[in-house]
Length: 384
Image (cartoon, rainbow, N blue to C red; front, side, top):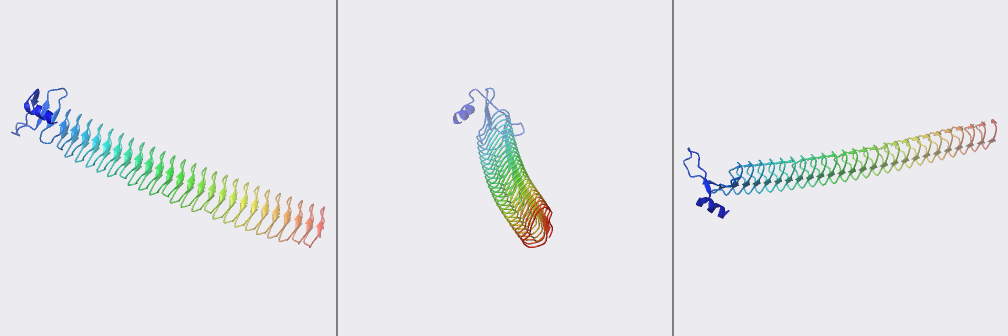
């Protein structure tokens, strides 16, 4: 710089730029006669090339760049900065009072510090952000790519148009969206404001914690849930749901569109449905209300019964310890075994096969027999 100033001042191979006639003062700008010319502002120490414009100090400007009172900035290709310090701007980038920013390809920053912006990215007062492909942030320590957007979030990693507000430590890909969530991992348009969630394929959660959601699954404030294939849960805890299952309960395992309310420890498969039941196992469209410890298969139905085993469309009310197969039906009976469409009311310890009917106690009936008695054994349509 000193040699350049001396050369310019000595008039060796240089042309002195004249001040405007109205200024009536010696020019402060000296330029070489090389092509393109190199010019120096002897008062400010700025080096200016190709029509650049500056009023700052110690700046290097090329290709029409423009700066106001900035200091120590390097600007190329029409870049623009105000009072910023130590910024590096290329390809039309723009910054206000930012410090230590690196901007390329039309990127824009306000008072941000230590940001790296490429491809039209935009940041306000953010600090230590890395932005690419039109990303936008005002936060701290974020990494954003492909048009991602974040407000004041901290330590987020966003790709493919993802969006986060004030969240912290989130990883978002493919258009995912989070509000103030913390430590979430989101892919494929997922949406969350919770903590420690893993969401894929458009999954959605509110303030839930530690949930794993895939394929459009949805949970509210639930905790520790695993949801796949469009499953849905509210505030449930520790549930495992697959294939469109729905629950708000605790410790349930649901597959194939099964549905449970606040039930606990239920296992449901193939569209089964339970309300607040506990410890039930349901398969093939079975349905239970608040029952406990029931095993239901093939469309069986039970209300508040306990310890019942039902298969093939069997139906029981509040009965206990009944075994029903092939469409059998019992009310509040206890310890009954029914097969082939048999029917019993409040009977106890009955064994019924082939359409038999009883309301009695300890009866054994086969082939359409009917009784309301005690300890009877009836076969082939007998009646007592």
